Length: 65
Image (tube, rainbow, N blue to C red):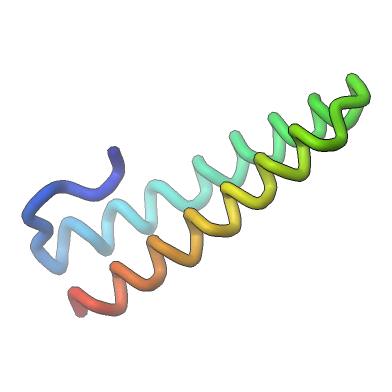
């Protein structure tokens, strides 16, 4: 998990800074691979999961600021 169980503000901010680019790159890579292979449903699912993850991380980050 990117987010620790008892986050301190610094921890959450660093996890967001480190986690967002990695998550985006991995998610986009998986999505393009799946689209290339013709798995449109799975690719859409990964994009959806990635979007939800980003929203959750932003929400948690704003809560601990």
